[in-house]
Image 1: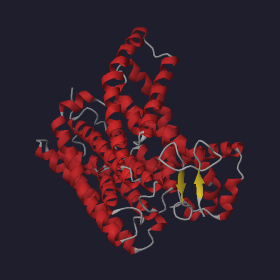
Image 2 (image 1 turned 60 degrees about the vertical axis):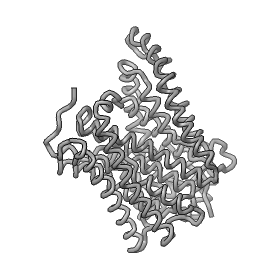
Image 3 (image 1 turned 135 degrees about the horizontal axis):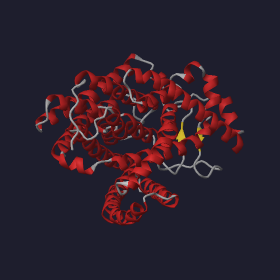
Image 4 (image 1 turned 90 degrees about the vertical axis):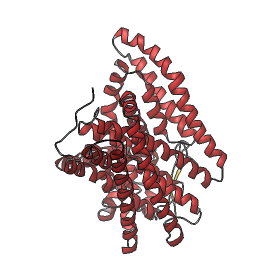
Length: 457
């Protein structure tokens, strides 16, 4: 039996790319669905979907706040607590101990509403991250950022590829239709990715924006994630048997960045002069900016990259000064407080830690954690030291770069929904994402503590 999450055409299931097409979820493997739950979802009207969606929002926000209160006592940013809350709301906790409540609160058909809204929140959040991105600071520390980025990609990718080779040949963690090369590249990309948007929030939470440590970490994280998305495009193209598609994905992405930064950015800067002269961003201008964000996210999703890529790039292209300040002030509160938690919950609904039901699978999870932490954290620390940074700064960079969080959840969600990985491997990678993100803040306090570096002018 399978439950279907429907795309824009609610009358028929669709298949295909990650966004804009339907997402197939094997209810017996990913979501703990019973026959009664499926029958319940089939009878839902649009009004019932709306009512359910409002109740879901209320429950999600309350749980995120409760977990956030506990997380703040442990020095964790709210966004990290929301990631954990999403897992707790899924079959790993709520579905395990209160399956009836879980079935009523998250029937499969409601995911057709939760999914696109969660993606909107994700795109809006990355748009804000792009608005806050400081290219001038990255350029000043480009040498260290590039070195840390290369080390942070190469070492974990090699270790991840080695684990992919082992898992493919000796376990059932990859489906039979996933080739050895696809398994190695996908797991390598999953290992080397950085929680770029979460990194930005952690840096802001710890007041590291503008420091050498924060600058190198954010610059290296941006380069890491761009490379990881390129690798993912290759895996998806290979999985579909269409390498021309990979060229289209990567070439389209490069062309998109060139057009946005070389053509659209100067035009937007000229447009912003009138806004600066008037001293306010009108409602019409605000809507135009939102439309540009949506079009950029839709385009990069259409060419085979994720919507977050387009939203982030158009955010970088937006004029700084009054325009960026107004956009951040209007978009960020609602996005962070309301929309982003929905994405973490949607990811949590796909996570069933109970699938790791043997010591062997937990041993595989331990191997993934060792490879992830050793490959990323240690390699970035050594690279930062090699470029002349102090040991304390290098330790801080290695710790921050080791967090994977949000971007890891995105890439493994794509892998699960496209059938590249099994739900069991998905669960192990979610654990890796959660553990490496949760350990970042307390480990940073332990290694760096109160000896905070000065902010760059």
